[in-house]
Image (cartoon, rainbow, N blue to C red; front, top):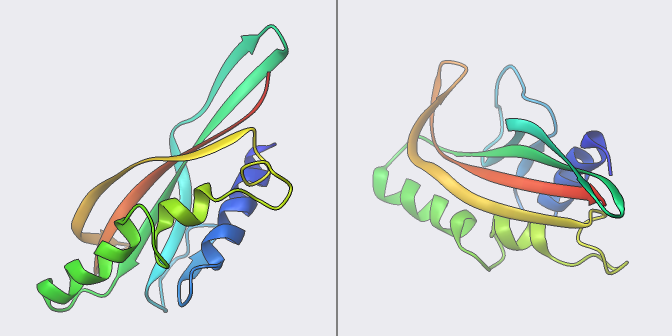
Length: 140
């Protein structure tokens, strides 16, 4: 699995969430909400060697944006995406087993955490949002 493969798989899995607009690359502006923007994580890649050979783990971030209106409604909007399971759950969408029996084409894929829930700016526009940290690995 390459970094591009992982990004493409995240885009495919996130697109399965009804009504979510997914950007595989950070856009200049967001025109449809809710939106998920796939971005490089920190660090982008971690390298290791196992007895079976080289192993690489990639880190990506998924910035989830919703409207910037009423605070109570905004928290309700975010809650479904942050939930561990459910029709809007980012974690469930990304960690569900694929039909081939591997997690999304990777040796493993997991949502590590959700951070920064609340008001956020993206390219000078105000939204409500949360960032999901995602790790994927292959090899070794």
